[in-house]
Length: 282
Image (cartoon, rainbow, N blue to C red; front, side):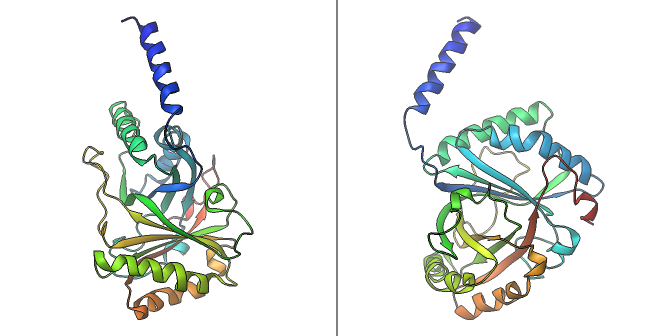
């Protein structure tokens, strides 16, 4: 088969794949990845991720339709809790966060592509090795709770709307059977009450899924796949100006009897194409 024929065949396959299957805009799945560049590699890591990996390793892939990068300066890192976090060890680890939405129903299709492209990038020397994945997880969407009901941006807009901050909250239920009760308490009672009058416009709730066995070895399976939920609080204000209410979150969850907060971490958005905040990480 000639190269021209192979190209025509590939084009036909692409057309066939686009004509079938889900193609909505709901964020049915997410990639949430918190990474710590090794000391001395902060600038190089930032440039690699922004100039290459954000696009070639994420946004150029099928069914990944929105993305945004976030950063935690040292000041923001020091607001994190709890000190004995089961997610970030030490709690300050993971100064960069990337969040991506994946079309509902396209998780398996996307995963086959992402494993293949990342193997290729690694083989071609386009994967930056001087970094540690602190918390990298593909997750399924469970709920979105809005502060203002039908008004304002929806969850599908969340990674494009210019929110001023993001808080990542990881909550662990007592066991797999208890996670459903935790989710219901969050969705129907806790989050509506906490959002009322707050600077957070919405909270999206996800549950982690097992990573594929053929993934790159530097990405570790997160703990708590059967027990955890990940909450993303989208803020209209810098988290440093409104952090006091978040200081109560651990106690409120524990007192509910439904679980324990394993990480509460604030971030602000990066400024694409710049190295802003890189000199404030340590």
